Image 1 (cartoon, rainbow, N blue to C red):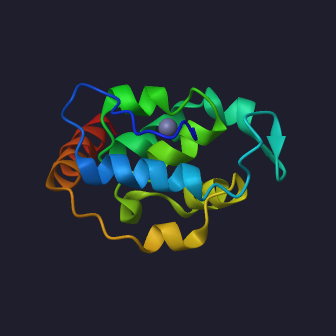
Image 2 (cartoon, protein in one colour):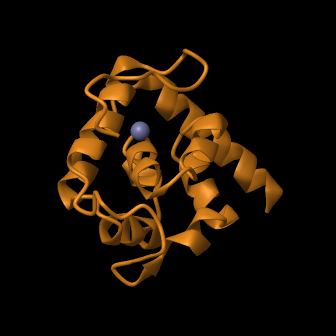
Length: 131
Ligand SMILES: [Zn+2]
């Protein structure tokens, strides 16, 4: 949210780049005033409870506590998504993010945080095992 200062969330292992991406997303949210309900034809309240969408974060290297934090409201849903490795997101998920207000250029940002890439790989391996 636009509080005028940056708050670090999570267990303290969150990198500065991830935090800046998170805040950059808040600042560029095209649907800034919408926090829930039907947004651009997307039922956010339904998505908020969906396991499928939580898995999108985990597969992209977002830590589990942050993936849970993403459910807080629509703004955090997008800001947390901006911290993941975009190449791991499904087209369906990216489509939903754009409809909820994420500018498409955000997907062009390079993921430079080694921890995110590492976590995405390990979560991917875990979800492959489950199938
Ligand atoms: Zn936030």
